[in-house]
Figure 1 (cartoon, rainbow, N blue to C red):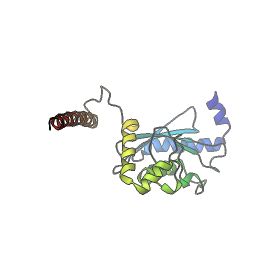
Figure 2 (cartoon, rainbow, N blue to C red):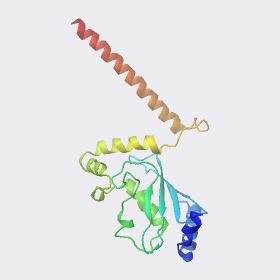
Figure 3 (cartoon, one colour):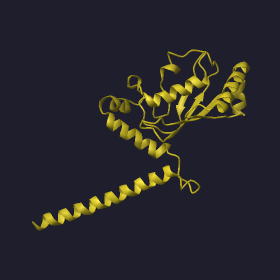
Figure 4 (cartoon, rainbow, N blue to C red):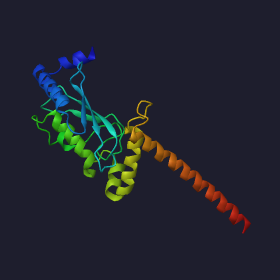
Length: 203
C-alpha cells in the first residue's frame, strides 16, 4: 500500500524513465555493481557494490540504497549504505556524503552515474567532507590504522557468509584457515608467556 502511494507521488514520466534505466543496468552489468530490482517500488533502488581491489574494502559486498525524492530529478536521491562500513564519507546511519548528491548534482545525472560515484568513493575517500570524523582523522593522520579498521569492518559485516553450499569455496576456506591459524598462534604466544613467567620466578 505504501509502495503504491509512494509511486503516485512521483511524476509517471520520471518513473518510466527510472524503470527503463534500471532494467538497462541489470542487462548491461556494470563492473563490480549488481542492481536489485524492486518492481513494487521503483523509487527504492538497491545495489550490491563489490569492494574494489587494492582498498581496505576488497573482498566485501556492500549493499547500498537510493531513495528518490518526489521532485527527482530536480533534486538528488538520498544514498545509504545498508551494509555497515568504516568510511569517512558514511555516517553511522549509513548516509553517504558525496558532492555529486549535494552541490554538484545535475538533473541529467542518472542512476548509473550515482552508483559509479559511490564505488569511486570506496577507492578515493574524501576526508574533507567527513560524516565519520574518526575515520576522516585516521585517514589523514594514521592511514595504517584507518585501513586496519576498515578491513576489520569489511571482514565482519561485508564478507559473503560461508554456508555449507560454498564451504569448498577458496575464499571461504582461506578465511577460515587464517582465523584458525591466528588462534593457534595466539595459543602458542600465551603458552610461551607462561613459560617465561615460570623461568623468571625461578631466577
